[in-house]
Length: 323
Image 1 (cartoon, rainbow, N blue to C red):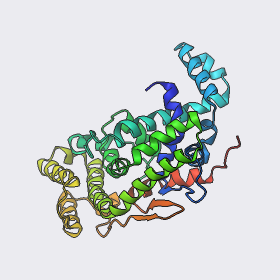
Image 2: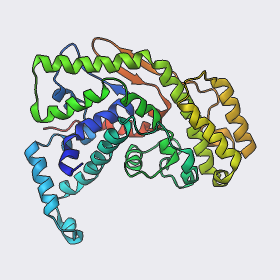
Image 3: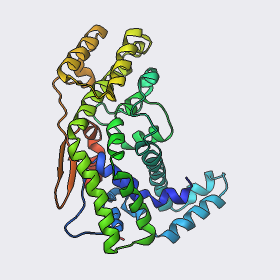
Image 4: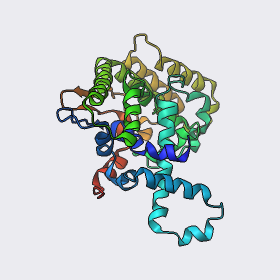
């Protein structure tokens, strides 16, 4: 994927963050805005300025970037501050677009691969703040295949959602909307049909989302335990426990959350780790709140969303940029 295409889907990528990390997906179905309108409205205010650039401006920026030399030390220092400030946003757009298209929406990608790289948990930068993760690092880690087990154990629910019937079509239509800005009633009807298709699937599979979140909650905290005590990564019993839980994520059999919590507590006790020191709550039970009505679809109240609480709050406080 080249730079121009990455910038084209900036708004979609950021809409993804709003949907999952922000815990909300909002479509004004009663007023039937176009796919282009929705893409614009879903762009977080904090990154609004960089996402509303015209196609010609985007193309010019890409051409200038390709023509530039690798010697940027002196020139970049003297460059326009606004242009320098946009670089992190472009990087975020690139990473998020790659993850969305090549990971979350690709059924060939395994739902989870954390145990084989469990030893890297102690090197993770995902939870520099013990109570809040970084959305930027999350997408960067997945895009660059850093194999961070703390990131990997938080990703399965996003993969499940973006592989729901209709979701890929919604993303593709929003991508095309930047060029066409098509507001025809037939296009809108097709667009909203796919939205409802995805929404209906998720509504009918809320229990499945709860199970995935419950299973990965334990796995995520196992990775945090290894980050606290790196020697556990070389322990055969720990690896076996991790692999059994990982296989169970995609197992359709009956899952007993109470028994799983007891096993997790026993593991932590044997390892000499206080559950509170890694933020593990044995009484946690996933209860996804999902509502599909004639005006909106909402998905929230998950432990994954809560990881990014500060990122969400910061985005909500940013003033909306003016076009």
